[in-house]
Image (cartoon, rainbow, N blue to C red):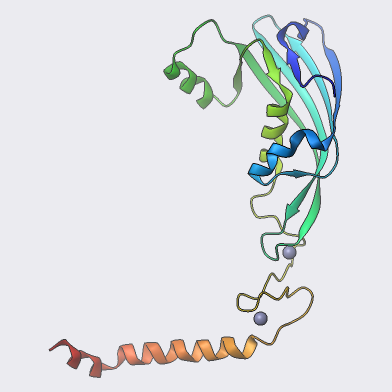
Length: 186
Ligand SMILES: [Zn+2]
Ligand SMILES: [Zn+2]
């Protein structure tokens, strides 16, 4: 399987390029966040350091199996993204308060235990690039709220019922406006 981290010693003053290829089975725990990997992850990483800061330029390729937010059909989306991360090394013990300050600074992350966990990095990138309301297609018609029929496949016969509901709603508001209801108060 190979390693799944970068050690801090690997950052040099000159650019270093590393290539990683991870099978999708490595990311099974990502399903907790609704991320199902459909293909392996190809990760190309360039490392460089100034001595104080540590820079990563990365390119990530994979594909995810994702559920349409309207019709719940699973479909595949391709992820092909570039990213730039900046890290600093934590100097000894940091109190929890200091950690909060570091995390609010979105630009720079702190390297813990002298290594950068690539699984964590991939997780972060996938979360960032997964749409919040994925659609299998732009004009997905979704499911009928009454019978659950996928309206992309065929129209169901619930339309009439919807009309009935609407007329019931109209009746409700008519009753509401009827001053006759006032009599119930006494
Ligand atoms: Zn859909
Ligand atoms: Zn229906």
